[in-house]
Length: 119
Image (cartoon, rainbow, N blue to C red; front, side):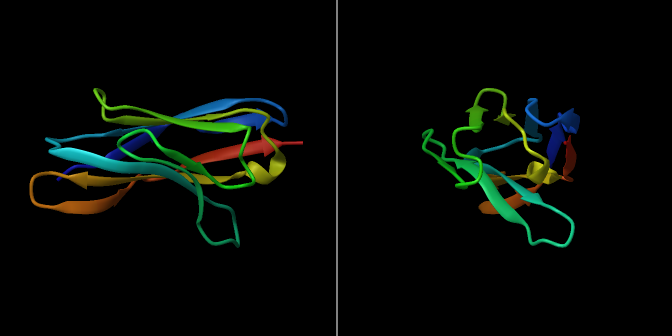
């Protein structure tokens, strides 16, 4: 059974930057789309950015021009570079990946990493 392990969250002042990482472990047959979601207190989980296996990216309007998603297929890792952070970016960020361990494709989630942006 594989898992997604996230790192890189923390506390930063408004205008600062953070880089999140998420690595998929185990004997992976294939990795399809990967992405980042976030959930602020009292809110539903929302899409932040996704990246397809071929590199096509998509972003929430609220982060376009500030966040960049990328992936390293050799390391089974997806990254989220977050620049010009705002207090409204404060949330728990979750990694998501469509993985196949040889028994079909399934959706996996990371444990979440807290990002707090102070004003």
